[in-house]
Amino acid sequence: MNKSGKLFPTGNTPTVVPSSSFVASEDADNLYNALQADTTNVSAIIKILAKRSLAQRFDIINKYRTQYDADLVEDLKSKLFGDIETLIVALMTPLDQYYASELHHAMAGLGTDENDLTQILCTLSNAEILAVRRSYHQQYSVNLGDDITDDTSDKYKDFLVSLCRTERVEDEDLDQEAAVTDAQSLFNTTTETRWSVYHDLFCHRSYAQLKLIFEEYEKVAGKSIEDSIQEFFSGDVKTGLLDIVGVAKNPIGFFAQQLHATIAGVGTSDRDLMRLIVTRCEIDLADIKREYQAQYSVTLAADIVDDTSGDYRNCLLILIAEEPL
Image (cartoon, rainbow, N blue to C red; front, side, top):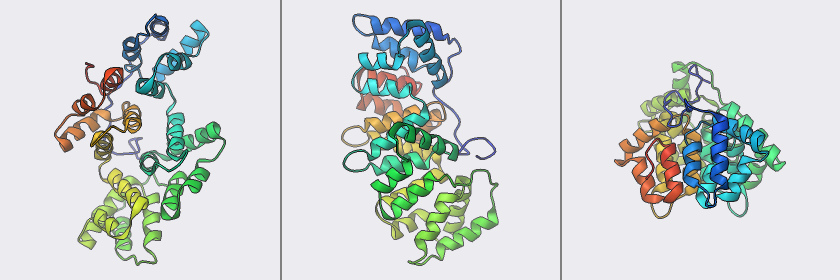
């Protein structure tokens, strides 16, 4: 980690913070009543769980078990349906388990969701990836790296497997001289050496150092690193390398773009939308909201209102610190 204790050097304003008036036993009682009502009081469930931190939700789970000898998550699953069920269950899941299930979903069945694989693995710290790997093995009795190897191929497989190995430097100070040397190495690559050099630098240098390398590369090459990636690579590995660049240069902007992609065009990628909001709401989602509006001249809330509905929409709005409809 860098000295701030965060994977990325910018962005630290969450939209979900611990409730100052939190009493786990009261929340457990209110959730029990909402679930036992003749018609499940979904609004009450949302207003409790979407306004608590993940740690507080775990406290509620434990109190609910003590007070009612029941599993709150299972009770929620039995009474909720569709997107709101998926979203609420995600909110109640430890992040390492949640990421593991998302990675497994990306590779399960026919086809592979390469965007999800890259987005997740490019934005987790070494410690987070290690925790996800442990959870993945516990949940599916197979190593994450083995599933990636079986489900992907060629350079893209090498790229993802390297990310899983948690070999990225996270504690170095910026080294201007090394950045100049690395930028020159990127510029001097040949067809035979190109992948080896890109793979080594992109998977092992810290994000802060990569940003410096990319600045130096533009000076020596007379064009951006993105232009060179577009020229030299194709397919999934090109997308993966561009994602690394996006995360290194502007992580908040990267997440804003990923959120926009879930909503733009026909239909909504609800699973991706949920994951981005659930995993960033206690970290930097307020920063991402501001960047979203700056990039797209529309608020994230407005796009969510246009693309979602009902209890699902209202829960998302609360999670991004906006008033539900």
